[in-house]
Length: 105
Image (cartoon, rainbow, N blue to C red; front, side, top):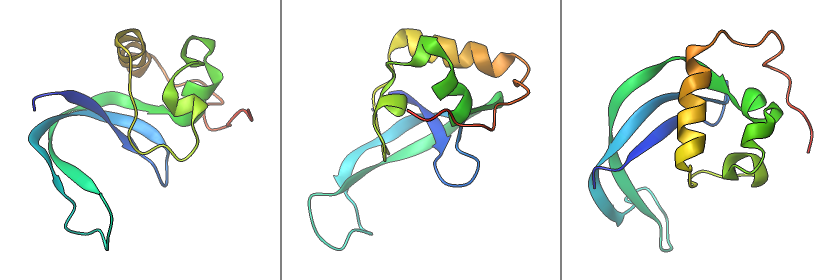
């Protein structure tokens, strides 16, 4: 409760777009058909100055070990303190000219 997280658009326009915080602890997901699915309630904290795209994240060697880069089909994953600060710094810079191209891994 109270943890902060990045809000990530995982479908169209794959990008980190904001910061949210957990406002309710895990509880059974009411939309799940079956299984041990849980969810948490989040509250928007703020938008980033600009989206940081998945392509940018994948292309940056400083983020090569980030779970979002290493694991496909990731919906929830850890973000280290250094990764957190780095992505926030990227969001304050101008977008790279070719940020929409994803480097294959």
